[in-house]
Image (cartoon, rainbow, N blue to C red):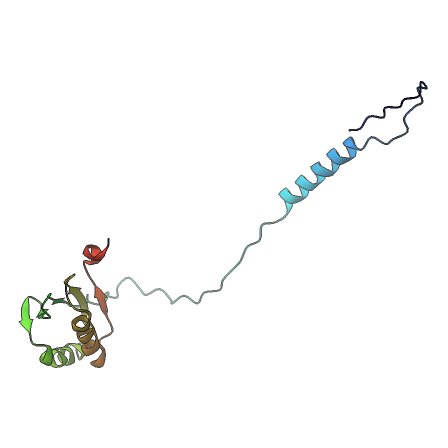
Amino acid sequence: MSMNVSTSGTDAPVCDVNTTPLIDVMLVLLVMLIVTLPLMTHAVKLDMPRPTPDSAEPPPPAEIIQIGVEFDGTVVWNGSPVPMSSLDGYFRVESAKDPQPEIHLRPDSRARYDAVANVMAAAQRQKMVKMGFTNVAEFRD
């Protein structure tokens, strides 16, 4: 809003257009346009597998193998110590099973990295695919 202040003593009429109602109408139209626009939806096509009948049995759960690596490099297979040289044989027997067992690897926080890496490498050489670390909360700061 502006005001015309003149120093002359004449009171001449002001011939400016009042734009305030025009701006108000434009803002209302803009808000109505924004509200009525459809929302952008991004669709992703997924090819989902067909549902199986309820009569089909779910596959049996996989066996779990607990492997621990102690601070001195000792490998513990389901509670019994195993020499590092015979791990390949153990993994060879387990990888032939169907379904393949899961390996839950639990290294001690003071265990050397190379001992843990050797266990993982032995599992990988024998095509073991289901492997994970358990109880890693003790490694967090």
